[in-house]
Image 1 (cartoon, rainbow, N blue to C red):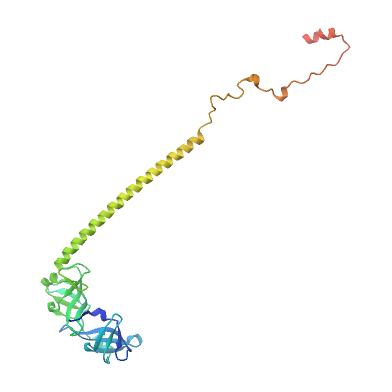
Image 2 (tube, helix red, strand yellow):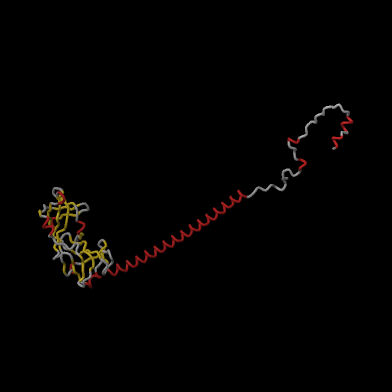
Length: 277
C-alpha cells in the first residue's frame, strides 16, 4: 500500500544517517519536478546558519518518524544557487482560464515510494469555495504554470474536494454541511442569548425586590427615631396637683424670731397707729 505524505511534514525534520546515527542536518526544501508532478528528493541544510547544502534522492529516504527522518546513504553536496533554481508550485497563485483568482497553493501530497504528486493543496480566496478552506487540486487539471501562477479550467473549480486530514468531500456536500452547522450554531447562539436575557431579568427582579425591602427597612428605622415620646394615659402629668408641689427651699418656713421687748406696754404695741396706716 502506498504511503502518502504531506510535503510540509518533512520540512525542518532532523536528518540522521541510519548507519552511524549521526545528524546530517535538517530538511530545508523538497526537490520536485513540476513538469511531471513528481518529487525527486530533498535538500538538507547544516552548518553555521544552515549555509552548507546537501542533496538526497528520494530513494535514500529510509523512514519518516515524528522527530526525524533516516537516510541510508551519504548525501551529495550542492550549493545555494542550485537550490534557488529548484522549481516548485508551492506558493503560486491559482487562477482560472477565465481570469479569476481562486486561491494559493500551500502544500501537496505525494507517494513516498514513487514520488508521484497525487494532489496539490490550495487555500481558497472565496471564488468557487469557502474562504480559508483547503481544497485538493488534482495535477491533471493544471493547464499551465509559471514562476508565480498556476492556471486551471474555470468549470472544474467547484468540483474540487475539500481536504480535511485525508478526508475528501465534494464541494456540494461541504457547502450543505457548512450551512447546516451554521444553522445549528445560530440556533444555539439564540438559545444562549435567550437564556442570558432570562437570567438577567430574574437578577433584575431580585435586585428590585431587595432595593424595595431596603427602602422599607430604612423608613421604619427613620420613623422609630423621629416619633416623639407619648406618655401612657395612666401616668399623671408632672405637677398636675399644685398643692402637692414642694415649696422651694427659699420659701420654707423658718422658726419665728421673738421680737425684742420695748419700753411700751403691750397694749400700746398692739394698737400702734403706725401699724394701721
